[in-house]
Image: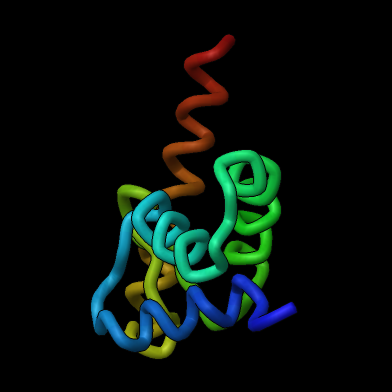
Length: 95
């Protein structure tokens, strides 16, 4: 069955030593797994969810992902707070 996709993502980011845009990371992971286009479409949402929930990763600005261990806690909190503020503004704008 091979290595889980989330662990492949960890290895890719570890080796790259810098953040990656989600779709670039996904393309690298799916290529490593040898997924077909149909499989890629079926698995992308679950991969995003896994990435979001795995404590080893952090979502930086502009949908870039990196390893949490490479960032100070203050940086991670700042990005999270900015995203929450943007989300709240979007909700207000929708009314």
